[in-house]
Length: 494
Image (cartoon, rainbow, N blue to C red; front, side):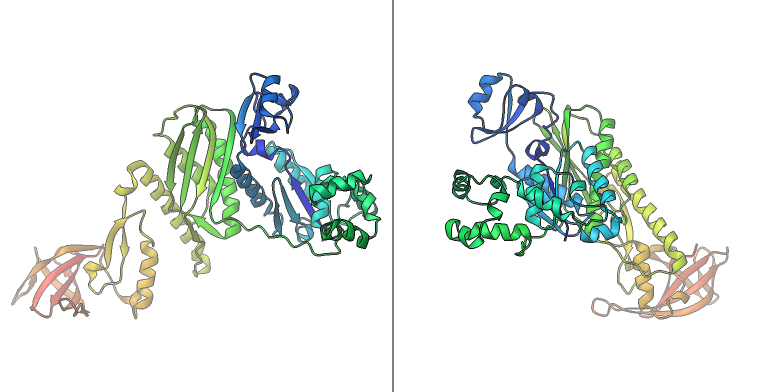
C-alpha cells in the first residue's frame, strides 16, 4: 500500500478566494483570528489572536467570517479532482485528502510522472499544498504536516525507502497524534516531544498509563492495525466556483473561468457516467449582490467547446451589474449516458447528425426562447393523424428518428409500407362517380388496400388506404371509410 496525503494549509482562505487578496485580510471565528493572508501576517497578525488585538495592530484590517460550509465544499472539489488519479479517496477534514496510489502507479507508469501532474495542477490554480507519503493512511497524514518531499521517502517505481521513512516518523512531534489534549500535555511534561520518544516504550505500559487510544494510534501508524476510513464518492450534484481578486468587469473576461468550470464538469460527468441537462450559473458581485441565470441543454454528448459558445450566447442579452467577484456553476439534472445498438458504419454519421441537431436546437432556444421552439414526435396511435404530436422542444424526451425506429420495429414488414410526407388535416373529401375518383382532377389507384381498424373503445374507425396518382402526376394517399362508404384524401408523397 502507498498512501499520499494532500494537505492545503490555506484552505479557509482558498475557499473564499481571499488568499491572494491585495488587501490586509483575516478570517475570524468566535472572535478569534483563524487565518490571515500574507499582507496581514506582515503587520504581525497571526492565527489564535483575538480580533481586538488584531485591530490594534492594523486599523485597516478587513475581517471576514470563516465559512465552514465553503471549506467542506472546496475540500470535496479537491477530492473530486483527485479522483482522476485514484479510485480510493478519503477526506481528512479540515484540510486534507488521502489517496491510495498502488493501482495508479500501474496506470501512470511511475510516481515521478504522477507527482508532476499533481504539482502542476495545484500551481495552475494558485494553491499551496503539502504532501505526505507513507505505507499507512495515518503516517501519510502526519508526514504531510512536515511537507517532506516524496522523493526522499520513495523511488520513482513507488518503493518506499524504509530507513528514511522510519527516521521521518521518529522526528514527528507528538502534537500531531490524534490524542486528547490532556494526554499530550502529560507526555510533554515527561519530556517526550517526538514520536521516537514514545515508540520505544512498551505498549502495555503506555496503554495502562494513557489508555487504549495511544496504542491504537501507534498501531495504525505502523500498519499493525487496519485504519478503515470512509471512502469518498462523487456527490449527486455538481457545484464549483471561481474567485477573482478585484472582480471581472467584462463578459469576455469570464470566458476563461467558464471554460475552466466546464472542464471540471466534464471530469465529473465522466466519473459518474452521466450527462447533465442544465447549467445553473450565479454571479457574486463585489457589492454583495447576486445574479442567477440558467441554461437548459439538449445535447446527447458533452462538448465543452460548443457549450462555451452557448454560454457566451446566453450572456449576450445580460448586463453585468458590477464587477464579478465569484462565478459559480451548479448542475442538478442528470441522465445516464445513452447506449445505442446501431450499424458499425452508420453509427458515427448518425451520432454526429443528432449532436448537430441538438446544438442547433439549443441555439434556437437561446435566440427565440424555449417556449417558441417546438418539434414533432411520434406516439403510439392507430390512426395516422394521431401518430404525430407537437411538443415543446425542451420537453420532448425522444427524437423523431428514435421514435420512428421504435414504431417500425413493432410493425410487421414496416419497411415495405410507404407513408406520405404531408398529411391533410382534416382529410379532404373525394368525389366518387361512375367514371372514378375525383379531387381537383382524376385519381387513379395504384396500390392497396391497407386496412386500418381500431379505436373501437371510443369511435371505431375502419379504413382501407390506397396509393393513388393524380392526373397531374402527384402521388396521393387516399382511404375509403368502410363504415360510411366515402372516400377521402389524406396526404401527399414528396
